[in-house]
Length: 405
Image (cartoon, rainbow, N blue to C red; front, side, top):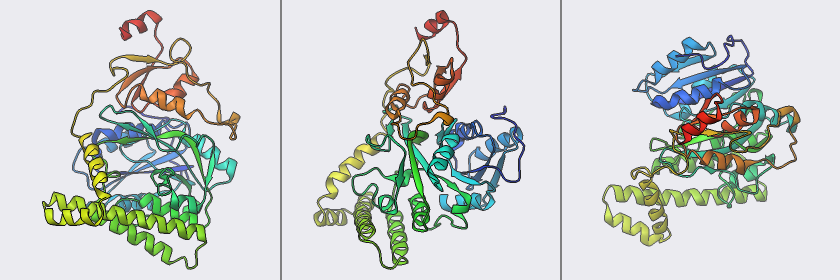
C-alpha cells in the first residue's frame, strides 16, 4: 500500500492519539484510515483495535503499518463489543488528546487542527463537531445539529442529558476530541453496546469538564446496513437504562434542571424498551404478546410503521440523485463556487459558520465516489466535506468539458 501521509516518525508523546475500533469493516477501513493519516496535524498516532474480525481488515491495517510508522494494531482473540475494543486502545494511547474515529467513517483533513483551535479558544477539555450523515443507497446527506446552531457553543450537563429528548439534536452521537488529562483513567462502560459515547461524556461533564461544539461537519458519518448505531435491542435498551440509573444514583441531590433532564431521558428509554419488546415479539411471531403490547401503548404503532420504512431503505435500491460518480466535479474559480478559505489563525469564532454550504456540496455526490478537481486552497478545503471525493489535479477546460459530457 502506498504511503497515505507524511512519514512522521513514531514519537513518545504524540499530540493526538486516534483510537479506531474495527470489526469487519472491510474496504471501508481504507478511507477511514487514510482520512486520519492525511490530517493537517501530522503529530498523531493511529491505534486500530481489531475485535476478532473474520474478514481481511487486519491485512489492510498491516499494509498501512508498513507504509506509516504512526499506525499500530491491537488484536483481540474474541469479539468483546465496541466499548471493550476502544478501552484497549485507550489503554495504549500516549497522546495529549484522544480521539475516536469509527472504522467506516471519514474525517475532514483539517478536523483536528480546527477542533484543537476551538478548544484552545474556549479553554475546553472536550470539543466536538457536527456530523454529516451520508448513505450508501444514494439518499440525501444530512446534518445532526439543528439549523439554529451555526456558531461555536458550550454544552452543559443538563443540555447533554436532555439532548434528543427535549427536541434538540441528539448530541450523544458526536465524536469528541478529549484532552488526555481530562479523560484520566475513565473508560467506556463495557456493559453498553449502544450509547457508550454518550455515557463517557456524561461522566466527564459530571466531573466538571468543559465542552464546546464547533458546528461545521468535519466528521463524515457513514450509515449503512452493517451499522450498529441505528439498531437497538431489548438488551441494549435495558443496559442503557441501568447505566443511567446507576450514574444518577451516585450523584445524590440533583439540581432541578438536571433531575428533570434525567427523568425525561429515563422515560424516553423506557418507551424505547417497550418498542423493542414489541419488535422482538413480532420477530418471534408471538402475535398475542405483540397485540398486548400495542393495546397497552397504541403510540407504538406509528413508530413501528416508521421503523418498517426505515428498514426498507437497506433492502430497496434507491438510485443516487445528483452527479454520476463517473463524472468530475470542479470546485473553484471556473467551477462550482465555494466559500473562501479561512485559515485557523484568522477564524472569527463569533461569526456564523457556512454549514449549509458544506451540506449542499456533499449532497451533490449523495455518498457515492466522485472525482473532484480542486485548483486552489478553498476548493481543496471544500472537497473535504464530500465523503468519498477523489481529488484530481486541475485539467484543461476542454478536457473537463469532455469528462462531463
